[in-house]
Length: 337
Ligand SMILES: Cc1cc2nc3c(=O)[nH]c(=O)nc-3n(C[C@H](O)[C@H](O)[C@H](O)COP(=O)(O)OP(=O)(O)OC[C@H]3O[C@@H](n4cnc5c(N)ncnc54)[C@H](O)[C@@H]3O)c2cc1C
Image (cartoon, rainbow, N blue to C red):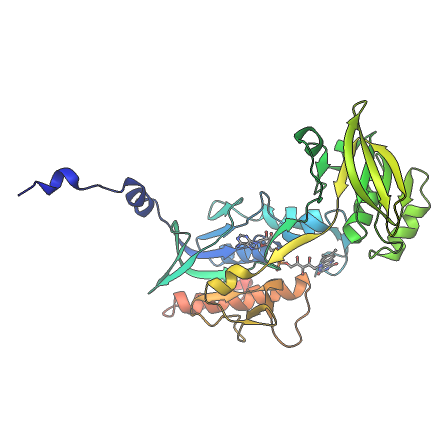
């Protein structure tokens, strides 16, 4: 008989995977404002928590889509910029909360009392706070070489980086107008939109129209980008005819919006209603131990605002505490903790 021992292959990668599984009381998918508040509230209740985001930074829609805008309807803050709100929400988190960015959660698997996430993380409870789903900026549909790509931006993190430059901004929604206004403090702006009307706020547009360093070109679409004399030379085509014009700029910001999708959630076996997650009055999904909050969910009368999401987090985490520690008397008020 052949000695089988010589032929037994140990799959080291599987073994490593098993050995490396990290255990948590709570996992949160999505580090937008609602997921971040959930992490803070979980920490207050003493839960060991991990929070994931598919992007390379936390903050969701406020941080990605309108960082410079002032929000006036967050309880307690009379006015706070979106980016400051996210900074405040991050500030509260300590070592009991692990933040994992650049990680799009693709797989969740319920195994008796635990939920396994992407074969690497095990958790006793889960909150889905994925908003509109993992979002990706819609790319400029042109073939570009890598030198040009380096000068094309899909987010504006630090407006001062554009100081003294001429920046072309493509798009007609709120983000395009907000970025144009913010960057106009530091740079010359050429705002290009394919329609005569903008979708963004009229009040922002009229501020832009009054600025001498902002030029607005409509209805034009970028057709070709080349480098000439170390500047970007952009050929614009007028919509509806063949008329072409050229503009020169140093950098381009593309604000064509984001593609969001909730395909993964369907795959996880979670019931949806109106393409969003269905929850009961405790914010629990159809799967026990799995809760959902924020813009990811739908129920009659829900309004997609941050304050509402914060309230949903408190409901969900109190329910999770009851699930995880049925023997304990739950302390609901932070003043009694
Ligand atoms: C222009 C604009 C202005 C607004 N102004 C206001 C306002 O003044 N006041 C107000 O209250 N609300 C405002 N809102 C709405 C508010 O931003 C949203 O209600 C809020 O962001 C919802 O938060 P969320 O955490 O549920 O989702 P999001 O902010 O969408 O965050 C979800 C996060 O989950 C991540 N994610 C998704 N899928 C995965 C996955 N599979 N794995 C890992 N991560 C994942 C995403 O990358 C994202 O970071 C505004 C929205 C817009 C677009």
